[in-house]
Image (cartoon, rainbow, N blue to C red; front, top):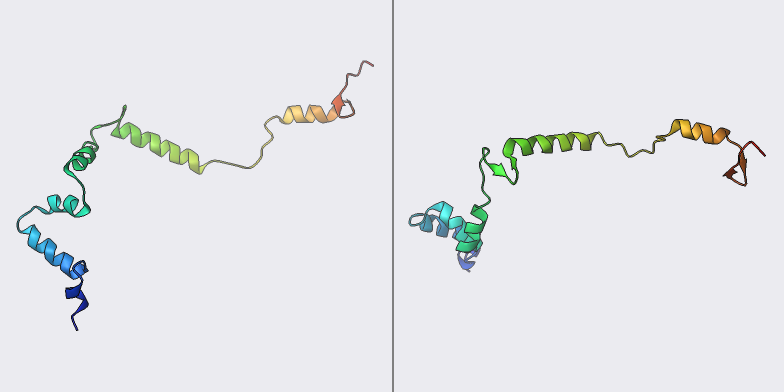
Length: 109
């Protein structure tokens, strides 16, 4: 019976052999997109998004964007979702006011 590596053309061993053979003729960087099935147009499209740490990312520089991301992450970590009473004084006053059928009424009656 044949070894499973030799019978399956897509086994890892056969793929590694093919890569080593192709690497003699083609640069490995060029081989990877071919293996992944990317067309030349797709590769050019993705290459236009490569940037250095000195370049622009949209309207911001790399450093400005990193500062904004860091500020966002700090604020995200300090979020509080518990219920707060923002109007302590108003709540206190409302409790002391006179009511009739749940509505506030004036004291002048």
